[in-house]
Amino acid sequence: MTDTMTDRSLDELGPVDYIVVEFPAGASSFTGEMAKELLALVDSGTVRVIDALILTKDADGSVEARELADIDELGPLQAVEAQLAELLAAEDVENLAAAMDPGSTAGVLIWENLWAAPFASAARRSGGQLIADGRIPIQGIIASIEADEAATTEGD
Amino acid sequence: MPLRAARVGRVGVIGHPVAKTAVVAKAVTPGPAPIAKTAVVAAAVTPGRRRRI
Image (tube, rainbow over all chains, first blue to last red; front, side):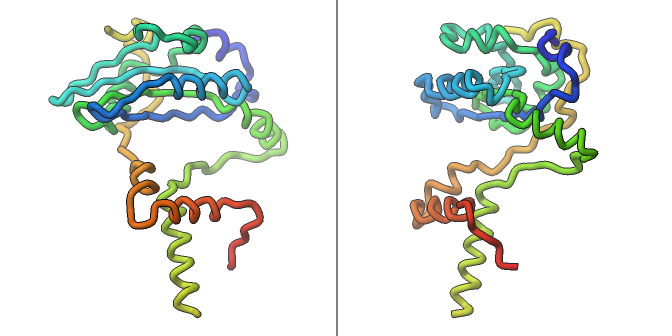
């Protein structure tokens, strides 16, 4: 891990999230749009990218992991790569790849939510403790609203 | 290419095999009324909307 992570007080650290974005075989279309949007988030101070890996899962289920630095022509992402903290361990690769379909490629991204750090610090200073967090899937929102609308229609 | 040596032998941070989540794009794009579904989701997160309980 680099000094950028260890030198900061834990109290100042924002929540750390990860995503695994899968690209099914033959479905990827890299135009640079993703890199552009990620850089915009970094440049605006919204997030700090902590780690990134590219995973490939063969048809037989075997997994290969590549460092971002091993990608040819990183372009503007070179600035992001230079700041990575290499948080993921080799044993994380198999755990992350468990979500992938055979024959696919996936990008793993770990980032700190810099935007949330001041609020989280304030909550801790106020005596608050984070006891739950999560993400509401879009499907859940759709199901809730549709059920609500169906109930309203029946009531008419 | 192999992972950097610093990653090998360390304790991981993920801790368990990750399960695949439902693919969001499939919930929003296909279906009989994809535009309507998008509008429904947008309405659900619109400021000022209040629950009815």
